[in-house]
Image (tube, rainbow, N blue to C red; front, side, top):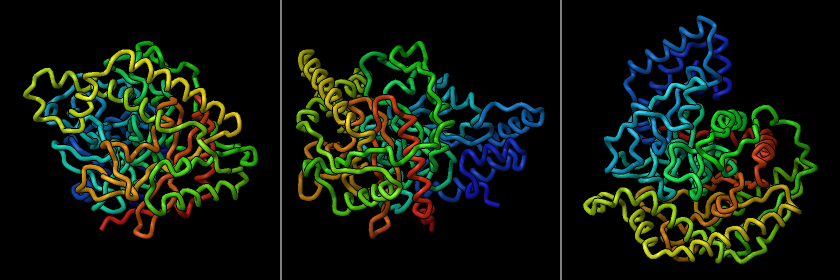
Length: 477
């Protein structure tokens, strides 16, 4: 039996706790698979010493022999996205400036994952500072798409998505600022959830009041695993004052959704505003037809507000928050030569930003949120493609144009993901299908404020209906 092929994370947990397989066997199978596939795809970086990992697996087996379990992830190998601090393991952020940085303490999310019993084996690759939805950096190189290694894996959680698709790990963590969970999930045929803002508190944090665009969250091959990982990551922490304290749990209530009560608004390409490569809308509409066949009401819906001012306000927020992250690294001018141009552009663009401009952008963001509430008066969920292009040539930095339209920034090609982020809403990427080349695409479903549970129930309903699609695996030859 090939352990890595046979189990999702929940099944692996059950087999370990039933002592059908040992933690050592799981670790050895994981390391063997990483050794076979990772050199080609470059999903996992900073991999720990095999002997140390096997010894840690033995310690987990010894605990189980005494009737003790640390949690549902007990003994399951986990690779952490290389933006999150990991005690004793390099946390580079994909930057040459940090390639030798080894934190002394875990970040909060990593503490919770370890607390549930996971064995941290290393990190998953990410773009430099997590910027750009294409996973490459000067420290570890490029992560390759699981379905076509000549193509981009997406990002910034590209390493995590590819590791999941290739079954190098059973479940993964990621983070999402501008689609960084959703885009790589869609491009690697897995599930990725951007939780409601505040659902998964991030600590340590440079700022706990204003930095409310990015969030950590789960990635998985099944909705059940996705929900269990969210249960592990989520929960109030007093050091993060805007974190949610509603005590919500997600894995317990995945069933029971009556599709006949569900109303989905299909936003498509926003009436032609968003340029899309050929075939993307078709694949996403086919996924929506599956939901229709189950009884969901799906209707084309207009955004109902001009999207360009939303983009302009988004740019102000993004520049302000990204610049604050980059600023410590440019205190020494010589460091600029070791920082990628896109990060410097974000930092330098913010230099002339005024408080009045930021306040105006915040007011625009507030108005946009209020407007979306009017859409949710008529719809339970909103739907969009998860990307505007198919996975592109991995040698490119970013797509310069889409369908003949020039992209005026390095991230304009991902404009489709900003709406959930800007409104702080939960959003999930579900596998939608493939083009004629075998490249995957995801459908983005956006839920009402704080309705992460409802979004997961809808995803579970969809998942049950598309099992043949989900069985389509990446070629590893």
